[in-house]
Image 1: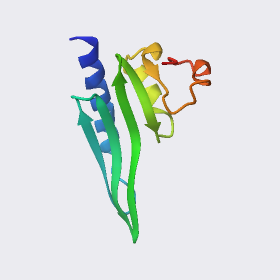
Image 2: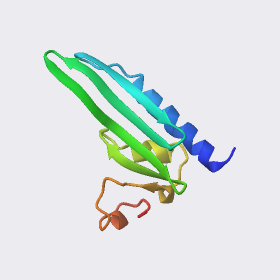
Image 3: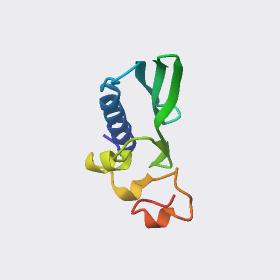
Length: 111
């Protein structure tokens, strides 16, 4: 299996595991969006908490030039940690939500 396909499978597995955890309150579903054509992967909450609408992206990962760009990370401990624990090297992960000038201090790829 090539690296790109391996990365896709790892991302899909991790996001599916997050989506399987039920929300503790409200009528909220967690949805996964896997766009393999454009290599875009999302975890989104959709629903209602009482009279308040809930709709938001929790995790957004793009694969750009064979690197995983984390565009949004709304998890407590960090999706990058999950990805490295699954075997993806830190130098193949970019924290896209961090300012470009600060990425060099993260321990992950700059771009």
